[in-house]
Length: 295
Image (cartoon, rainbow, N blue to C red; front, side, top):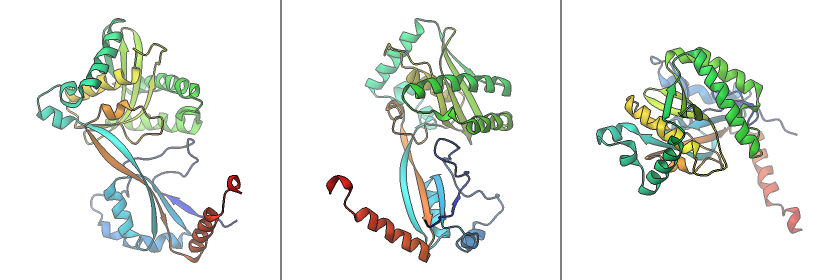
């Protein structure tokens, strides 16, 4: 077995589902640092024994930046879409979110599910105003989230104790600076859903959710929660509302609620070396072999 030594950009390299990933990732530089100082990156990484650099959630600009600073390194890229809502454009149109951004069909679905919920009581929204309240909301979100994903046969994001501790510490550290938004939407005194989002220069980056799902399909908690949150963010003057890159089970309604799409790259940079050349040849040879099913 030939060992491969990987470095990870701003993540810990833990197994999928056991750690924290990144989106809108990139090389972090102080404002007064010249990006040209990274020109020897392709010299430093080999001295550290790095065979591959793995970077999740790069914007096209960040991907191009790394490719320029790693000349000769092969790049393997997988792209994902981040559907988002341009709140500034809607505000300039002086229209409501539903009128300006939603198709007639989607608008009808939204109105029907919100009307169904409103029969249980007034639709309400709460944005956490303290660290303590944000942590309480995270705990409730976690319960809904895990119940949903376990029922689907998945572990759920909060199955990892390390993951849970990380986000509790993150909220304690960053909530007061305004970098985190915890949202709770209700119908009467019953929670419909909770959202955990990051705030970046006026953009809302939706990260995790917990919804109260029911057998009656008139009640669509994801749709009701996000639309209520988007309308609140529009009123509060935020510029964009991002759903971030999703998984295979990401609900289709997120694209239906969006106005634009940003592309994000999951990239692997492979250092030119005899070892990587040999491994590449071996992978190609293995892929060329007939599978057992066709023998």
